[in-house]
Image 1 (cartoon, rainbow, N blue to C red):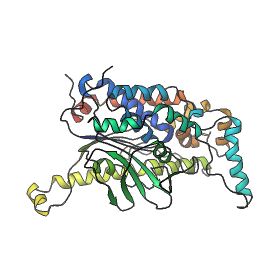
Image 2 (cartoon, helix red, strand yellow):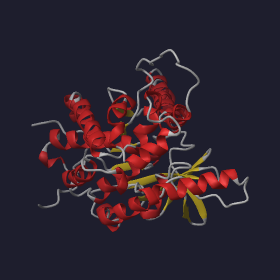
Image 3 (cartoon, one colour):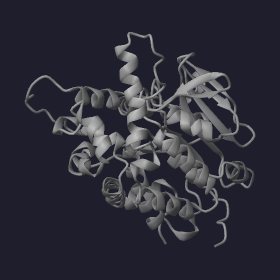
Length: 387
């Protein structure tokens, strides 16, 4: 197989892949559908690729294979359709119980014992990423023109900032905004581990002297990094229900269990900021549409309309997780059962941790179907109309 030529003059589309743990399998289904419906000579449709949390891992694979987009999608499929939680965190009884037991003992000791840094041990994920991602390929793809920029967002525990680490072609400048900054440096394994370090669940990672955790925390503008890096259009792949979809309200059976509250907290980390940012972008686009172009030129205000598309699950992923929760290893089910996660009300929490192939394959199928349903519009949007 030969590498595809760098893409011809098309709109610079930025791919934004959000976080969400095991829910990121949905993104793989979207990419698989795009690789099927795009013309073979389209090359890499995304010169700017930005990822956060688990979405950063998917984005990194695509960035390393920017010269062979379909091969990158195939590599994602090979891992996600055969996933097992043991590839992400220790699921064997000694490994799973060691950290959680130390956590409990530290809590009962009243602070006399040193607390562990995380509830679960994600050493298997580190090994998986080392085997499957050649980070040096990102720089080569940028030099060869197959990729303009790749970025990963993390959350600094000391600074309280949302930090986007990026690697790009000459001309990309660092930025500084309220609570969010962009820093240029080669992207490596620590950035992916930090961006996907779920708070409390996985350990933070030290980069340049500061400890970082999951990039979705405090990320108030998820689409901003792609725009800073030169994207003219945005394709956003979310992993949760959009605000425009009706909320589901059901009578409460009693006080919400800890798992339901934890799932609600994770939703606020992974989903809310994206919805707010999309709403902000829509409002800016509508405002600019009614302002005469000569007036905009006169005031010289740095705003421009940004065309975008959003692909999100047509079915609540917690609903799918409720069907496959039994696929988790027994020891993990036992741990989650102590906080009520194995009940219907706790399926939201389970959906973030359910790295099992049956669940992942269901999400891949859903992502594929949701994308194919928008086939013609996406082809036009990406500037790759079918022959």
